[in-house]
Image 1: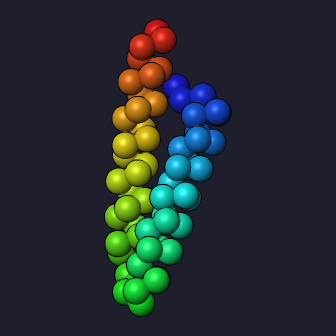
Image 2: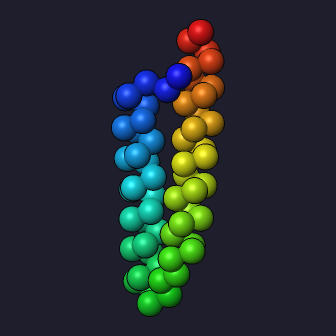
Length: 59
């Protein structure tokens, strides 16, 4: 089970990564929603992988 503090950190990571990609793309007028979505999905999966490794290490 994932703790609440890890859920908060995952949400923060996904939000900040999405905003970073959005800002980067909008600087050059090349905003594409699918790129932001896939970046958020990548950050989410990476965060979940780190959290699973951390919680498995504790147990």
